[in-house]
Image (cartoon, rainbow, N blue to C red; front, top):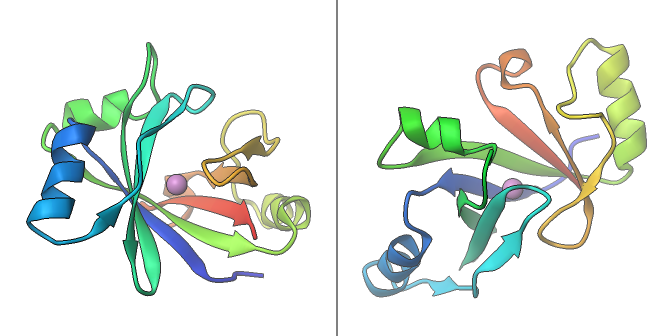
Length: 134
Ligand code: CO
């Protein structure tokens, strides 16, 4: 079921500063900021040869990463995103296996204009998992 690692996401308190650091200190290519109001975040992607790193900062009231940043004020690793071929089949399989899908359980459109879902970190060794239909 599990496909490629699509990205690793890092929550940051200041997206502009983090983007500049990746560009200048690490010499990386960083995409332009993309606001995702439905997810309560603004994101950029850092391109590396074998995957991407998503940097995300809170957007609007009640952002799902606000509490995370309150606990981790300098930022921290937030989730990993794996690709799946069929997100509804993956969801149904995981639910029947006892995993909890966050939110209403329906896929939302993610940063790459593809359906995504998040799985409860307590069900996966303390790691928030995002699934993206490839
Ligand atoms: Co992500």
